[in-house]
Amino acid sequence: MHVLGPGFYVEMDIETDELVYWLKVATVGVIGVVTIQTAYKLYANLRHEKGRSRWKEFLAAIGFIPPLIPTALSSGPLSIPLDSKHPLNHNVARFRFLLPQPDQVLGLRPGQHISIAATVGGKRVVRMYSPVSGNEARGYFDLIIKRYEGEHALSKHIHAMKEGDKLECDGPRGHIVYKGRGTFVIGRSKKREKRTFHHLTAIAGGSGITPLLQILKSSLEDYSDCCSLHLVFANSSDKDVFLREELDALAETHSTRFRLTYTVSKAGDGWRGCVGRPDSSVVFKLIPRPSDDHVVMICGPNPMVKSVVNGLKEMGHQERNVLVF
Image (tube, rainbow, N blue to C red; front, side, top):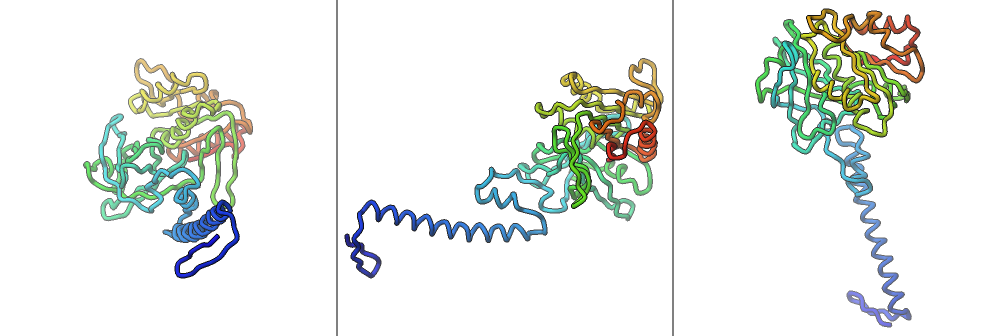
């Protein structure tokens, strides 16, 4: 058989089918080399961009895994405008902030939080907040913030914001991540430890409910997660309780494994919940006995957290089974 190439003539003793086969092999080889070279250049660029790990983005770019949902925090600090504000009680409101792109998610895992910064009274103030909207929310995220007074109180500044006003946001932050099905990754970098529990108790004081609600909702939304959950939501008075409609709905929908307890320090007429501080014997009686299969999660004002942690130690709960957010 004669094969005519560009500018030359070759005489070959080869069958047509065999020739076609080897031409295909050669073509695939050339494409493979080019693809590998292109993929490596893409990986090298992604790897060093902004000093962040981009391995999954690289795999998605070459079609090895499904396309990734774009995350806002992966690009670094954000300037986020306020979209809306909805009061929940006399000093707590739910704020919705917009992400740069409508198809983005924030990029947090349950248990993590973000830093929010603004200039208040001529001073830059930074505080940590845990969104309650879930990482599936596209184009926005929600924060629940209690207003505190003070010359440099960031919460007071946020409560006074108008639609379109902006804050600085960065993250993820935090050393506790809930992976699902009772499994937590605790610690930072090389000191991380994976722990699995089947019983989760959450003790929340006021707006300290936000990171714990993240974890509880993540568990309840996963029907393969069989952990038993108990939320103790503590407030100063019955007028301070918020999110009651949402929490009651969760307790009713998931009654087989989610228990909800409200407790207040001062009760008004008609109050049907518990009466007692979160560190009182009334509350501690609701907590299961110490066990390596049981974790107690706590978030709230520092004095409350310290008092509850001390009470748990007296009950025999080991420090490794108590997570403070």
